[in-house]
Amino acid sequence: MRTGDDTIRGRAVRRLPQHLLSVPVWLRVAVWLAVFLSPTGYFLLLMMLNSLQVPAPPESLVVALFCLVPVVALLVCGTMVWLSRVRWKVGWLVLTVLAMSFQVGILLVIIVIAVTAAIAPV
Image 1 (cartoon, one colour):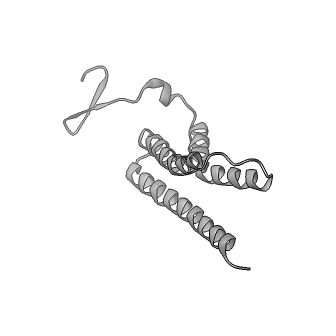
Image 2 (cartoon, helix red, strand yellow):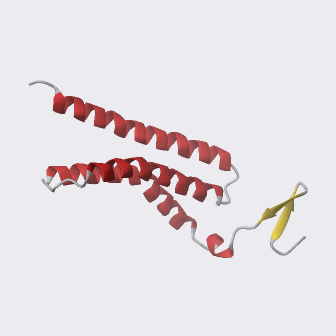
């Protein structure tokens, strides 16, 4: 065996960096949960700013962030799950993708309802 690699079923597998292994599990879970809920936090922040009558940021920025925040959150959560020592990595990845899709789907339904209510004749 080489110093930086382990062999599993004849293939060389890189070890995780030591600083990632020294992070407590509760901190990794807290970071994962915060990143996972960031799309909802972004949406709630936009709603709060709207209710406080704060001038709206440019529409292109709002739309770009609305598209980028869930994608980046999914990549970060997926990377954190993949680098963890959990035995069921693929199961956790699938669960993360399904839960993130559900979260974004709920947000889109709320947006469609809000837009429909805003343009509906009184």
